[in-house]
Structure formats: structure tokens, C-alpha cells
Image 1 (tube, rainbow over the protein chains, first blue to last red):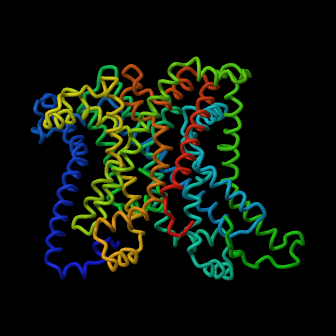
Image 2 (tube, rainbow over the protein chains, first blue to last red; image 1 turned 90 degrees about the vertical axis):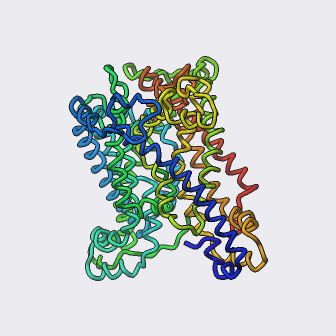
Length: 294
Length: 314
């Protein structure tokens, strides 16, 4: 957590003149960062505040900076003609199943790559790494054809089943993590009569909390936000996810109201923000750890 | 990937059980058992589809009839028959060429500001990271309202600076800048990666620079920036790969319009595949994009040799 300024604080503070420039620099930094933060957070505030405006005041110019009156009409009307709760249930189902699938499969595969020697292992690991370079676009169409042959179109299988086969990036991440653990632990477990699976389950995984949390969070966020997959594979309205529901709300033939659109956006965003504030530490650690962007 | 391995397996398999199951064999067997989920997944969801995609790109395939071999015709169609191919390529090049440098620099500057020892650092960090966790669909509908020419806040803001209103998403000239502006809002993810990079710079370099009498700017230019170049390269490459595949925001906000000015490459590909069911042509388009992305990634890597500094001395 050391920054250049922290590093030499002792030397600098002795000098008054330097202290004054430091103060000036800090005020300038705060001014810049503060203005930027307002600029960055304001759209979020705008989404929420627009969602609680009454429709007549939406058209006010200059706009109502603070909604008056505050009303939940948009939320009620959205819920009344739109199966929002159903979409929420669908999204939660897909998200939960594929998150669990990813965590389990990646842990098992990473354990294999870390703790066993076998002919072909290094080659397979290189192969695994090289799949990370492949943009998804190349397999987009064949996946569709494959799932169509399996008669999986308009089911949740295309969105969940692949998660159970591991994901190169997370396998790599977990393997790096496993290698930091002392191997004596595994030996001790083996001597005590643990099978390999129970060593993984009882000894290794409990020590990987932060890495597992990071993976789970990214998977959760990824599936919650995913748009293209549901767009391609789901076509009956009742099976829509939140992302697809919000998208089709925008294209409603009778014309959805902007305030309702913002209500939908808010409803879709709040759970992610909630998860983020609860697991903020893991989120940011995870980004740093994996280099994945939200 | 040479690595030293500790044999984690124990000696529970006693000699005399079955002779062919030696310890080495047992370990190999366990290895393949444990990695089998990935191995199966690799064959079914990666290797198979890649081969299929390669094959299909030389065929005409509309799903209803079996694929028909047409040689290089799909590629010929893309390069000389399909006007929208060039249009979408140009739009994507614009988005990448203007957007990527802006995002890389912007995120770097933010992280540099945030890396100082100031009060409220955590608040700022969370604030700037926040937009990048917003679901793409939600931020797209939000920006539709922000970019609204009559009621949008963006026009209000630039109006304060004396700039006349812009019909952002309604004009072919401004739709791409609007998309780039929106993408700038989400640079928090790259910023966090930079922050991690900043924090991994060892203090000793700064201490040495202090002893040599270097000021703040000298330290920034001669210590921080060189040591950050690997992180900059990483972000640059990730941005290039992701930006070439931009899809959801344009699909949701403009549907590729107005006048195809936001018809990005992936949008064009998606339409060919899932609206027109020209699966063979879509596969050909996918391979062209893959080659383009690969080319620019390798080019960036080559170029990086001139400016990336590895403190380990390579």
C-alpha cells in the first residue's frame, strides 16, 4: 500500500515549504478527483432519481434535480404489465447453477494440474493456456449449431452446462493459488487416510477463500449481466433473463416510459451494487488478481 | 511451463494389489480423472467448434439444408461483395482506434491520481469502479436517456460550456463518439488493474531516487512510468481484444443505426448468423475478425519491445 509520498514522508515533513506544496497538491488532487467522482456517480444517481419521478415531471426543463414528488409509480406499473419477478427468478437460477458449476469444476481440474504428474500434463496445460487467447467469436456459430442439434435452443442448458467443464482462466488462477500452499498439508491428509477428493474438499479449498470468492463473484456478475447468450438461445418471453427483459422493455411496441426503463435499470443494478458493497474487498482484489474487467 | 511438482499422492496403494497399477500409473490415472471435465469440455466446446467453424467458413450453410462446399466464396463475398462488411470494419476501426488509446490513458491517469496518499482513497476507488459493474443493458438504457438530444444531461452539461446541443445517437457523425464517451464511463476496471500495478512497485526504487535527489516528476517519469509499462501493455492488449468485439451497447442503443454508423463488426456478424441464418458466411466473418485481432495483438506485442521495461531484465 505504499505510494511514493508515503515512502518518504519522514523526510518531507521536516520542511515547511515542501509541506505547503504538498498541501496544495493534495487539495488539487481532491478537487480533480472529487469533480470526477461527481461526474462518474451522477449518471447512477440520475437512473435512480429518474425512476422515482412522476412521468409529467420527467419532461421538465431544466430537469428536476431532486425528484418532487417521489413516487414509485414506475415500479408498480412495470411490475403490473411485465413479469419482472419471473425474469429475476430465471436470472438467479442460471446465475446460481453456472456459478456453482464453474467453481466446482475449476477447483477439481486445477487440483489435477497442480498435484499429479502424468505424461502429457505440461502439454495439456499449455493447451489450456492457449484457449484463453481465443476470442469467443470463432466458436459462436458452431456452439449454436451444436446446441441446436442437442435440441437445447430455448432452454437454459446452453447458458449453464458449459460452466461445468471448467474455464481456462479460473483454472489457471486456482492452480497458481494452490501452488502457494504448503504441500505438507496434502501429505498429512493422505497419511490420515483422506482420499484425493476429500483432500481437495477438506484441506485445499478451505484455504482458498479469497480466490474462490473472486471467481464466484466474477461468475455471478458475468451471468447476471450476460446479454448475447440469452439473446441467442432464449426465445420464449417466459424464459427471459433480466438483461433480455430490460432490452425488450426498451422495444415494447406500446412504448415503455423512460421512467419505467430507469426503474427496470435500477432493479437490475441494485443487486449487483449490493453484492459489490458486501464483497467489495474480493471484487477489487479479484480484478487485480485476474485482470478481468467488470 | 516447466514446473517442479510435489507428488501429492500418498502411498496408500500397497504393492501386491494389482500389479499394473504402479504408483506412477495411479497418479497418471488420477491426473486424467481430475482434468477430465476440462478435457471433455475442450474437445466439445473448443476444439470441435473451431474445426467446425473452419470447415463451415468454406461452405454455404443456412441450417435447413446441409452445408455446401463453396471454397473461398464467403471470403470473396466479404471483401468485394458486401458493402456492409467494409462499413462495419471501418466503424469498428474507429471505435478501437479512438476509444482504446483514450481509455488506456484515461484509466492510467485516474489510477495515478488515486495512488497518492490522500484521504478518502477508498471512496474514490469505489466511486470510479462503480460504473464498470453496472450491467451492460442497464448502462445502455441509462445512456439512452443521458444522450437524449432534448432532455439529456450530456447536452445540458456541454451547454454550460457554450457548446450547442448535439443529436448524439441520431446523427451518423456523432453516434460513434457517443459510444466511445459511454465506454469511457466504464474504465474503472482497467483503473483497478493499474492501481494493483502501482502498488507492486517496490519502495526501494523511490528511496534510491530520493537519495539521488529526484523530485516528484522525475520519480514519476523515470521510476513509475517505466515500471508500469508491463501493466500498460496488458491493459492495452485487453482493450484491443475487447473493443474489436463490441456488441451489446450498439445492439441495444442504436441497433447499428443511424445509417449503419454504429454497425460494428460483431453486429454485422450477429445479423448474418442469427437474422439471415447465413451460418457459413458468419463463420468466415468470425475468422476474419480473429485474424485481425491476432494481427493487432502481435503488432502491439512487437511494438512493445521498444517501450516496455521488464525489471527482471527479460
